[in-house]
Length: 419
Image (cartoon, rainbow, N blue to C red; front, side, top):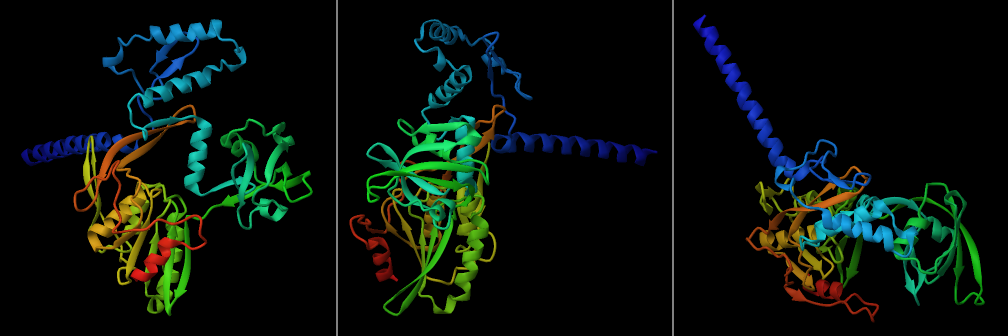
């Protein structure tokens, strides 16, 4: 009986410990991964802040916050603003939330309304439904910078330099000139469901100076994040491995490229890992990529409000035996800087190009009830030798700037000489 009492007591204590550990782990991981947050929303009918969103509750320290000035401004706009059509309550609330995040003075902590958040997610996913064109402006008119190879727009006959004057889409009840459109307007209105059709009125200067219509059937547009080519120069063959983002498809595309490199490993003089204009993406992707070069060492460390952690390389470091140079420029940011910095610190790999952007913080994306997204800075990351490169970037070992006025790529030319 005595033994049984001790055993039950031990089980009880064990359960208490497990419950405590699970609760503590939830608090720690929640700072980075939870979706349901204590985010207030505005009750438009009663004109007050409502903290009852999802499982949220109003933090006690904010119960006495006075929102009288907010509603004073709201009432003035509602009463006196000239154009009533522009008084969209939901957009005004979203604007207020955007102002709240911007008040922190951190450009990477931001609120994205549903449409913008969806666009950002599609960018990381590397796929969406549309016609496949890069958009820009020519003389203040929406224009085709380039049709994506093999995509519907190119197949239909759209060419680089075409001006887009008018867009018609019966499925969207859309029949508008593009005058005054922003690039986001153009993206939202030209994209659409797979299989749907959009009629573009184009103007091509070399086509008798007359506009013409092209109907394009939308399809899935896939933008690769990894591209591999082999450069031959002076009897040397080099793998040119371009990594343009760290998104949903990057891991599979990267593995496919690595396998092709390994098949030609004996013929290669080295690898040019091209991280130019790579704005970053998923933090985990930087660990995956660095792990194919770094064998069992720290890639990066994170220092957060609730946690600090070293992230080590994983796997077999499949490319560790090949000479490596890393190409960077001012468009190399965040996750791409983690990779470049880790390869420099751990392997002594040379960086060639321009000073990198300088983004040394980690953001966590929280999904909100309105379909929008809140990006919150949760940590800063530190390179293996202890440097924090936020706002300063990483200085290359060999400084070379690509001259856009020439056909040659001066950075690659210099890298080939180095190999």
